[in-house]
Picture 1 (cartoon, protein in one colour):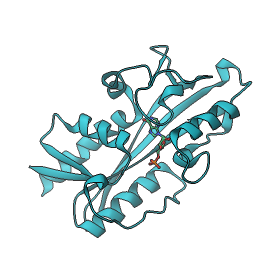
Picture 2: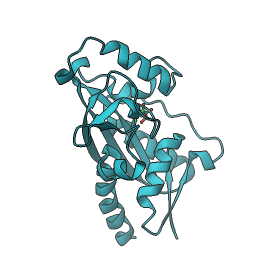
Picture 3: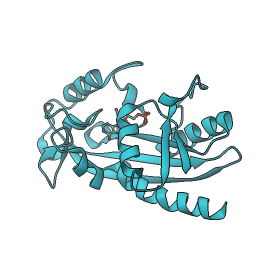
Length: 200
Ligand code: IMP
């Protein structure tokens, strides 16, 4: 069976990626299943750059086929912040709760029609010799004034999906998987993965 190592310890991401790859004949493992790994400094200015760095550093270290995923939230009223800093928006080591509190505070007083935002995800494939490719996906939404629901992770309780008038915190994972930034990027990723395996 083919195997891919996902270069993350984020359980929410691992759950979604494993679920999306479940129909295919690919075993998904993550850094949660591995021993000590080199620290990856996420200093890229773009999701693409960070996704590529994660994939290449871990592929070179392990010699395995690696997926690097970098994602985040761009809020229009904040000039695109938190962007690549989404995981540490409220400071180094901040958790989802603190990041959500900060987002609610920064958007207090911002009118509903100006609360537009999008999630972005970049996914890179690398092996020990090369960065194979990087693909991207996005998902448009509106930032709520308070948390709703407990599904998902990160900013999901605040991220309203306009077509459903519910947050990803309220919607089941099965719905998020049909429209999320990560699912959209993963659809592209499957094409490069297929091509990669064909050429081996
Ligand atoms: P990364 O590990 O640097 O890619 O951090 C991504 C951060 O962006 C996460 O810690 C979340 O705060 C946010 N994020 C990315 N994707 C999602 C999602 O699907 N739902 C909620 N938050 C997300």
